[in-house]
Image (cartoon, rainbow, N blue to C red; front, side, top):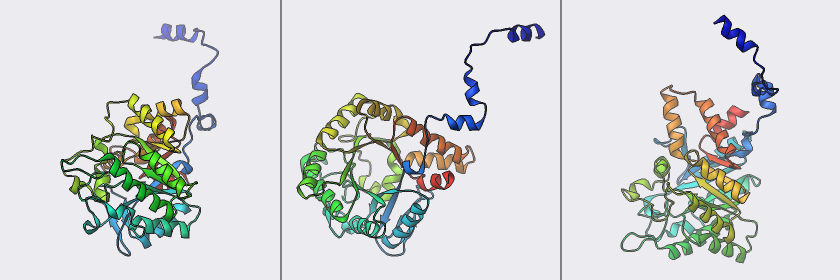
Amino acid sequence: MKRQMKKLSKQTYPSLRMRRLRNNSGIRKLISETKLTVDNLVQPIFVTEGKNKTEKISSLPGIYRYSEDNLLREVKKLKSLGIIAVALFPNISKNNKSESANEAFNNDGLIQRCIRKIKNKFPNFIVISDVALDPYTSHGQDGIIDSTGYIINDITNDVLLKQALSHAEAGSDIVAPSDMMDGRIKIIRKGLEKENFYNTKILSYSAKYASSYYGPFRDAVGSISALGKADKKTYQMDFSNKSEAIREVDLDLREGADLVMVKPALPYLDIISLIKKTFKIPVFAYHVSGEYLMIKSAAKNKSIDEKLIVIESLTCIKRSGASSIITYYAKEVAQWLN
């Protein structure tokens, strides 16, 4: 052993030792390539009808549905933590759901009222509004269906345009079509321009995969029971495909999207990275409900350090190329970072 140590000590090391730049926390922070900040985080918020409601969501521990009045209190808290944006999702009563999803573009609907209230109270706070029909359809799909249950693309686009315009009229900063219908970005962009909503931005869910990570979200918006055993594979992307995501993003950018989304996030870091390198554009990533629940469940069992795992996960998402991250952990992470 002594001879081995003597031999090792006489070895000539290279002039550069990589560990020099890791030997204390100060130098590690000084040269860190990726910085996660509160500015990068968007908090999803579920809203529900009624007054003075803060409803627990059993499948999303720590996440709630808020009535309009309590929504403003929550936004105020988020703002105080440095969060600058929320993504709104509705949970409406069954009475307001239909096959035609007319409630989606009701100018006095739940989401439209919430957008107005947030923008009136906090005019500089960014509101991202979901443009999709699944919370409003009686069947839980993201579009209008025919007699066989197939989504009718072009008729659905007509309804999505009405929905997007109602959100823009209410004051939404960013309308976010998450439906994955063909051609809807072009139609929405033309509609916004025609109605003089020049500064309303479009965040297209361009690479949204037919994923098994969405279950808790569907529970939160109340579409899971309506959807039943059906799936969304005829319009959301096949999770085995990569090049297809580039085609989807390219089409959406040509049609007028300002921003694009990859959903889910962690299992699709390669997709985020590829889109960023290919197009050099702002890319949003959605750290979805299933990802959130897995971490929460493991933390509850004390199998992991929740804070360290979350910070690592979100930093990795940003490292892959994401400009912003929609995550149910935004509020907690803002508290940790502050």
